[in-house]
Image 1 (cartoon, one colour):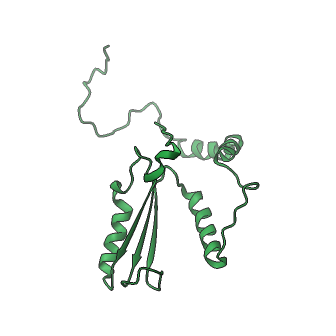
Image 2 (spheres, rainbow, N blue to C red):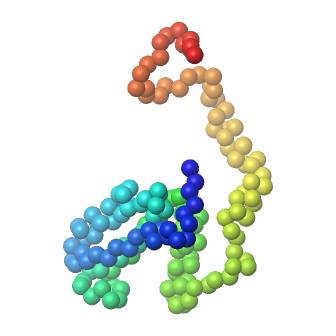
Length: 158
């Protein structure tokens, strides 16, 4: 279910975390696995779908230094694979030039993208699925695990 978070409620849209791991690479790995797999870092009911975790190798937390790490942890509800490529490109450009490139006139909004995607011919996709499922007996019941089994007569009531 979609929920639109009003601007006045936006206090919790993202989380920021700052940690020190010293020379303990095992701790760094543990933190990275936690960022990757901990579902409690996000809260879709409040709209918190973005988390930034800065990891420092030493106690100087004023600047990033060699050996430090930044983890951008973004929920898939707001970030898909094509977005990752755009994000990496923009982050790289900002890091190298010290400037963000903001050009709203030429930017493709998500609505524009979804309309364009709907208008794309699906002949290649159709051909792929027709070939993939060509010899599949579509009338055959799937053998999926069940928590209860059907009776053999397969008659339904109600």
